[in-house]
Length: 90
Image (cartoon, rainbow, N blue to C red; front, side, top):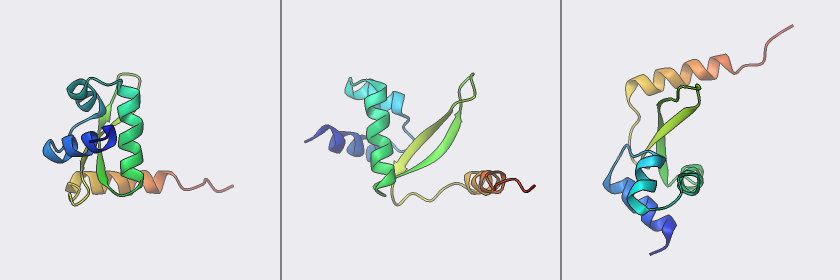
């Protein structure tokens, strides 16, 4: 089983896992796991939700199997973010 498959299997078995949790379980560097999780997310193999922000205001995500439905709060938050990202008019 490749490392990518191990990461996907762990998230499937442990929905809501963050890159730090996955990295600790597999004994791999967190930045490597983070890149793999982002790769799986972009290809539609995993779903992610904003889990919070660090003390320096950097967002971090919880990952779920692709068939996971986002919680109501996440849907509302993503709608607010989409509204804020619109280009300012001059």
